[in-house]
Image 1 (cartoon, rainbow, N blue to C red):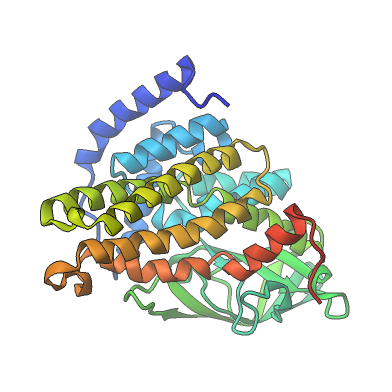
Image 2 (cartoon, rainbow, N blue to C red; image 1 turned 180 degrees about the vertical axis):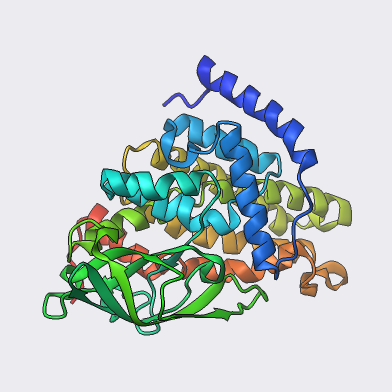
Length: 374
């Protein structure tokens, strides 16, 4: 497979690179990591800048090759990450684009692309994490509304979100995968309580969300009632297969920085460390090729699980190697060093977006054709 840019793609890359070179120096300073209202405003401002320049719809409206070039060039240039826009741009938006009706697309997609609204993800629950289909948040039909009660956890960006992609159980008698519905819930509805959670790395981008008789219009249902598990698989295929594209580029950049630092501080003389960095270089080159293949698919599939499984482990190994590079002088214990903060956050990657055990099962059953466990 020829992965070189064709002339049109090369022209897009050059134009984007030139635009980034002009606009990035003029951006305001990033707000404090704990200032979520400030971070929301900053992230929405960046999305609006992209929109005004004609790059707003690249996450689901552009050709796969163009999308890859965009993600590669913005990461290499040090452009702002999607941040608080993560769920809207990379999860809910693509799902609505693929599964929503025309009214839903017209209502929800433009504000995300214009940097006007933030989404959060209300999937996991205290007793339904890896076994997501065991969720117990209930939604009963009352005329033109669903009345929702329950609790969600690890709800990304709930404290600053306008909307929530929410999974609810609408049929308690059906088998657990068949009684689920996908809703878009307004976060200003009465009955919603948000309690931020602090992570091991000290950040608070997650929250618990408690729902007490929250009324959600039936018109906000994406897909049919009780067909939410299928819609969720669409969401998760985007989350596992394409949402980490920019992070692969970032990891490759960090790997290059590790090698340069090792040469400067003498750690490069350790042949074991050199072999480890060389193997990681091969790992991330292969992951980048897999990413290109995943993004090139019209609809992400189980290849996303293959990617998520290997990327999660490779990211943890990368920052373990960073600790080795910084071993001299105790820098590996300095939590103010960005590599060490990333080392802590990397521990979550084998859990987030479906645990590695779940990904192993998906690969075994859907790719290898092995029987399901009992």
